[in-house]
Amino acid sequence: MCIFFSQLLPLPKSVPISPDQTENVNMSSLSSKSTRIRGNSEWAPPRAQIVFNIHKNQKRRDVMKRQNQRCAGCGMRVEVGYQNRLRYCHYLGKYFCHCCHNNSTAVIPGHILEKWDFRKFSVSNFSFELLRKMHNDALFDMQDRNSFLYRKLNILDQCRELRLQLYHLKDFIKTCRVGQSLLPTLQQYPQHLYTDIHLYSIHDLLKVKTGELADELHVLVEDIKHHVQQCQLCQARGFICELCNNESDIIFPFELNKTHQCQECWACYHVVCFQTTKDCKKCERIKARRSNLASNSSQQKVIASQ
Image (tube, rainbow, N blue to C red; front, side, top):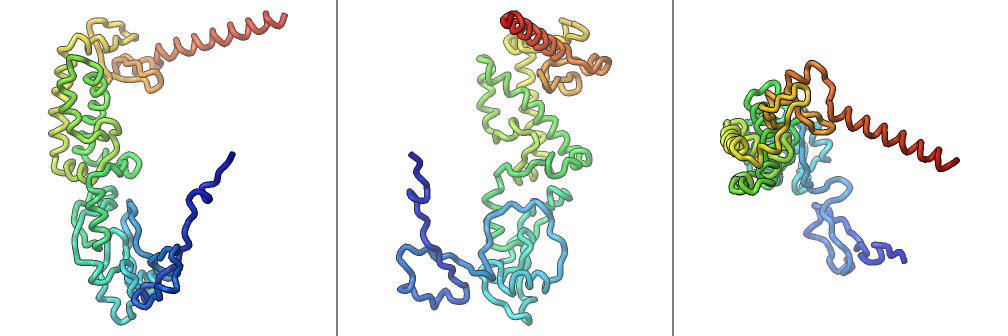
């Protein structure tokens, strides 16, 4: 039997409350089941949102016209002659009255992602609190937003390589009973640093700029690599390059300058060896096996039909 959610959880009727009439609302005229909503057709309170872009420079009167001559925070109507007294929020790109904007300053994510600009700009009280709450949240994908910064900034590209090494190394200590002692050290860091190499929080980006994140990751990577090199269990999980068959040289996916890893089957080869052929031996075996299975299956169907 199908039960509609509207029958289980009926939504109450909503009544818009204008910011100009909040003190004169007749509460007795509202139903006990009604929900008062701040705002009207001309204004609505700001909502929590992630702004990735930098707002273009616009004339104050044009912005205020789009705001219907109201403060973006409380909805107070502002006469044209008093527009210059309002304060601009660089995060939301809107103007606020002095009650909603105390001239607090904060770094703007859009300026960091587009220009690597860590200067602080004035923001409204609402934006300041929102940026404070999202400070440690991994919300910004550098590869998706502005991959050019990897080529432009050596320190950022260095962090990317260290995080990629850590992405491969984490599996070794998680499955090695000898390397379990390093696991608490790894878990002291936010999980996204070694699970999604392009994801950053504002806090991470500030640490990248100062070089602190690269130094911390370098120490952690070297400690785990030292364990892998000394541990027989981890050495057994290494690869032998099938192109040169050099059994004395065990290679690992975290050796970025030395090893090429196939993105289809995850087999590893020497970079020099793979450049000569560009063909993955393991993928060729998998394709041949699937082809044989398909041909055998078709032959069995022909025999069964006879």
